[in-house]
Image 1 (cartoon, one colour):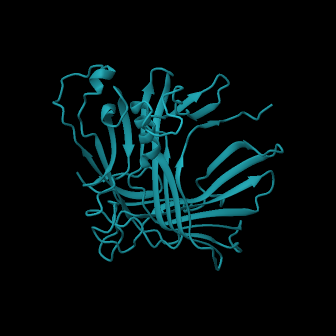
Image 2 (cartoon, helix red, strand yellow):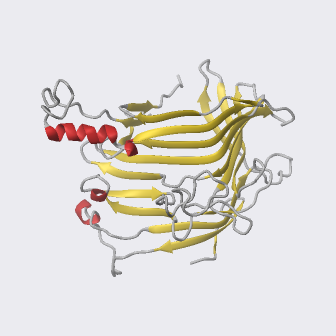
Image 3 (cartoon, one colour):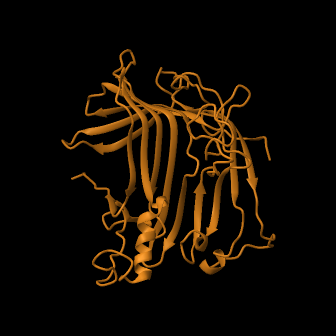
Length: 355
């Protein structure tokens, strides 16, 4: 259905909410176990935002002339013990050709045919055995015959694999300009603002999947981020914006980041000291003798060899970074790429620096 108003922030949007549920309606709610939930075949919730604009930092000042709403991160200390204060002065999501956030126009996020999705899926269909998996997913990728070039500003159907369409003269499209200006103060030094802007950004094919791991008694998950932008820029300016340093420009920017998979999920935990722990456990090593000394399938345990062959050759487990051209100011340094990154083991642990 269309026409449901939504505005909890200084923004304007129209929300199209499609709720598709294939189960018969029950008179009362009952608790389901893991086995019963894994058999649910609902279509979940589809979410589409029409004519959406979000902007923080553009409100009129309050009665004292101060910024009306402040997005600030505190409680961080530098290595020499000084307080670190991160203030986001401007944050926006808007239509294409926004001139780095100066000209904000609406954009559509998702399409009725390819919406954002919130769903509980059968883990057996995605390699997570006998689990119900919560999935929050961006619009899907399509076949090359149906989709649009993920970077092309004038892409037509059949030119790529993204479902989000670029803006045209008659259509605002589903690709958003987004960016932020933030100020990082270390102690009393609040000298510069950092600006990050992405033009016509697309995150089709991205998702977050979460489930409970019985053996470790922890939350487990998979995270996939696809980020495409014809131009991603970073620069620093004085606090009043009167002077700026050279702009770093990354043209045709592509990031395909994979953290966790069905064989190596990412685990979320809080340790005994109250610090957050994120971990991707190492893949189990083969037992002695399961893989032949020459590494070939002949002479190896075939099931074990096939398992590791599938693991190391699956492109869905790997991350890629591609930049069509890397420039600083008026100098171009050409293209850059990092391909086939595979996380063998990862552990991120926060630490309380307070005495």
